[in-house]
Image 1: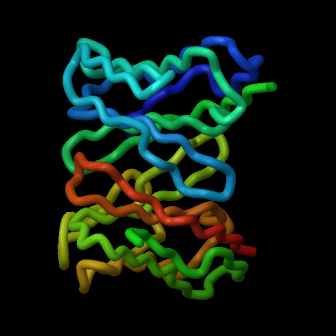
Image 2: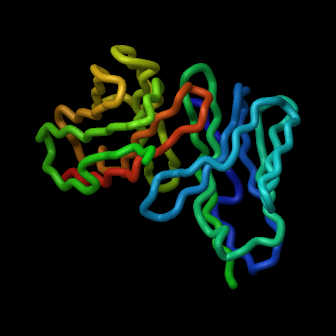
Image 3: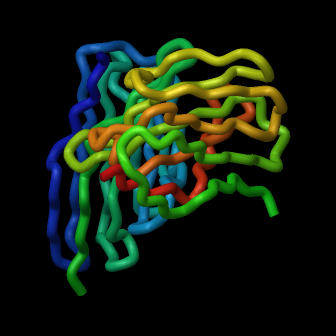
Length: 109
Length: 112
């Protein structure tokens, strides 16, 4: 089983702070996706990265794919309470997807 | 509205009683998938389908069956459910295996 490890597992920060979530694996992925999941709902895609070293920005969120395509990071600048949720990374190899264990983020007003 | 629907949303059953969770998408997607989500383990892929009549095992297929007779439907079948299959199940679809996956609302299953 290919496992994606996310860290930290839980994160509680004050509004306005910056944070980084990491997604690491010993496996190479053809693409990597980041999802956000709200309680009682299915995950919703935030971004897909496919090229090693790729950086994508989505407003206050910055996503980076490692050069070797084994790891990724999600950086949030000036976190807002609306950023609260479960963040999941997912790696694609062949036709299968492998999800990380998730990072539960709470942003305190 | 483009969506993935799952039924039922909640289900309590007993060990050994066969059940089916339905999944349907209206986006004409070729790729469909079933996941289970458990605390501390994240989402794990059970089965996926690249197209009609094409299904393959994911990471945790034991105890599950699927079928893909029509493009829009991808039911998950538990022939003889056991308590370790108590979980939150998600169906997802996408236009290709590397494209955006759209998830259903989830089915929470409790096997007694």
